[in-house]
Image (cartoon, rainbow, N blue to C red; front, top):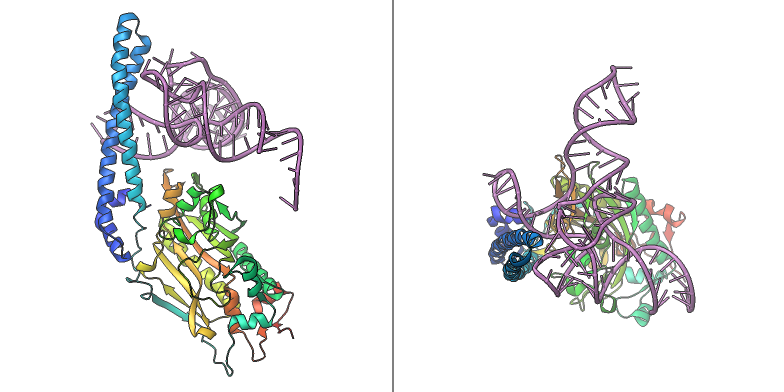
Length: 421
RNA sequence: GGAAGCGUGGCAGAGCGGCCGAAUGCAUCCGCCUUGAAAGCGGACGUACCGAAAGGUACCGGGGGUUCAAAUCCCUCCGCUUCCGCCA
């Protein structure tokens, strides 16, 4: 949720942000008027309650006839209070609804436009020139007996798979390498719950436009997380945390579940787009004024990981229309995928400023000791999809795959993965 | 799954339906005392909204109800603890 103070003082900033996202700027006016009517409903109810309290005290002390008279009056007042409170809670609810409809304020400098209007911030490494026709990751992985798609489909349906043998080892190696980097950088390692309560899912902003992406267990009123960002964001919900020592950083490891509704026919081959994958996610709670710098740091850590797997990539600044509701800005790192002659997303880091934390009620004390809403940020360190880029970029004519140097220690020193005859 | 108990401020822990936003202790902070410290003494010490301020209102796990009035009574949900049963 956005800050209502900003809204009141600078409604035009919010309108501009809405326009940049391609969303309705008139929602801003609905919110303003909802805010106004809530404030007046509250003050009406407050003064009626004050009167009632006063009167109640008199009733307690009064005797006999005086008491009877006061009681009658108090009864009347009680009805008025009840009505005023009903109005207040209706106004409250209306405000919350309107409030939730507005996405986070877009950060200055974000390119305007839709999905294709990103800015390329930089390109690192050169796509390799192949002296042979490169295989795609699925073919390579099947040759290595690293994945079993057919049985994945048999057991769980399309977009499910088994990582087998070296494939499973490779994923573990990648996760461990990411975790080790994170811990070395001062992150606290976390293995998080995969199921969360509705309030937490709601608080992270995933039940808005992306609600259809989320698996829901109706029977238990729980949601399967699409990223450990969700449980990590919820970790400090309703707390006032100490940030005097700098940002609090967590690295979460979880399986991630996504319905991929509406992506029929997209990326149907291999493990690029699947219903379940593993991910190491960085998550940071920091003072709002430090959020921009922290965002750059998260991006730098992502690039450090990408350097370790030695794949060509570029960094893009996602356009305003393509930002999630919670994100004020988002940088994606996209790795070169030879079989597609395209860059595909491997990491994504978002600065959610105070938007998530406001919903989740996460605060810290500022220099004066006053509570203030914190900023939250997240970024990817490794996912199952990384295997795609590693496979394709490091393949050799015989279908073997060279293991990037940094990853070898996590694979018992293996330097080449060779196809099983 | 069955039974019982519990859920109060950073922590511990009181709290007759009105005088309770809430005793007390610990922790924390500020003074005094001291060469310095400890102890001792005095004071401050939750969050949110409204208000220039004085002050007002709300919050005692969440929601609902009874009542003129609820931390206190009732219902319900959530969480925790213990016992029994079942089972990775």
